[in-house]
Length: 391
Ligand SMILES: Cc1cc2nc3c(=O)[nH]c(=O)nc-3n(C[C@H](O)[C@H](O)[C@H](O)COP(=O)(O)OP(=O)(O)OC[C@H]3O[C@@H](n4cnc5c(N)ncnc54)[C@H](O)[C@@H]3O)c2cc1C
Image 1: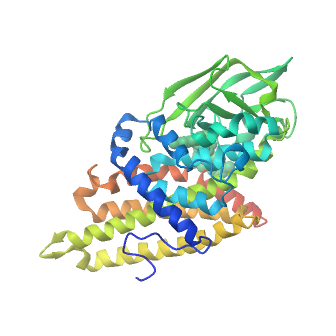
Image 2 (image 1 turned 30 degrees about the vertical axis):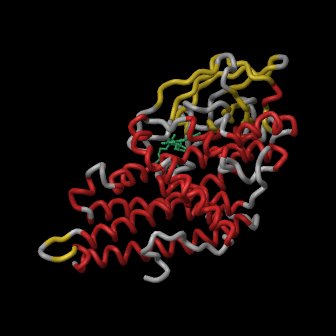
Image 3 (image 1 turned 90 degrees about the vertical axis):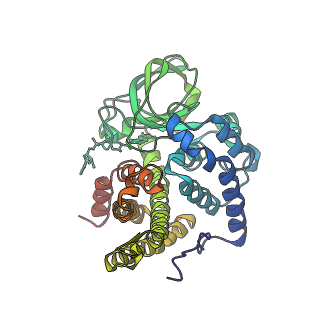
């Protein structure tokens, strides 16, 4: 059990240097001070306060990879991995920060004009602007090309009509990248998809309910409505009709992040269960001494180690700019499924206490299933893998 650290030390990843590990230590200290003591409160409030975002921004933990001229630090993606791992260690409810840093803002850095970058990026770095991405609609999620939200160009504005749902950061978001149809006639349908940046205050943009979820309680997830919403045509991201291609490109990093989160969740659940079974006694001996416990832990530890090896290589490949579509899809479904199974088995090994909110495993058990659903369901991941295998 040497490589599966039984101590609470940062793991060593091949793509991380000593500088990354120092950064991890500082971030961990920051989160232990600014997030851990308040996390339960945020869970019951069903939202993370904006003040946490601006504190993250002040310390340089938001969008560190973007250019210095927009306020970033031009760090490599290894720093993003560290941030995502440390946020996940605190709780999956912080996924909205990861979404802002490594999912939404990259659309602007990759596809935005110079004017758009200057307009939006600096406040994304400070945390004054919180971002979201809205693809899913009440009637369609997996079948993204079939979205019904329309954007019609009239003079200097697009007029947007439609609704989006399940939008992470939906309540806080000041800037939302919205997938719309600018051409409803064109075939294949995906050629009609474009991305518009819709901002807080745009006429006709409103928010619906903060959705009541099974888990991720501190993460605000909302419905968004667009009724003859007027969006300046300068807010088109990239080119009309290329939105679907942009989404397919950026969804790879999104899925990788979900894989990273699931892996860290598995590591955390396993470690806390090892600690628990060593301290809990039944029939005059620690629960860890029963062969069933040992075998379950051994099986889970094996899956965690194999998952980590696959993931580390994948992150290194992604950082190197390789085509990772198939392997990202593999990691996304497999690591989230492993985490789901581990949550269930770890709860069982905690006995009745595992079902009590005061034990972290209860929250992890509620939080983990959605990882198999968002960023493209695990079934969709398997369709991608099968297609890329020539089936
Ligand atoms: C907490 C949360 C946060 C989210 N955040 C965001 C966000 O920020 N932005 C955003 O745009 N969306 C977000 N989503 C939406 C999420 O991405 C979708 O829920 C997901 O893509 C699935 O779409 P759907 O819910 O419409 O399910 P459906 O597409 O209706 O799927 C229903 C079932 O059918 C299966 N299925 C569908 N098509 C196929 C197929 N071809 N082959 C085999 N099986 C298939 C699915 O796997 C699933 O089991 C979020 C969802 C949740 C729950």
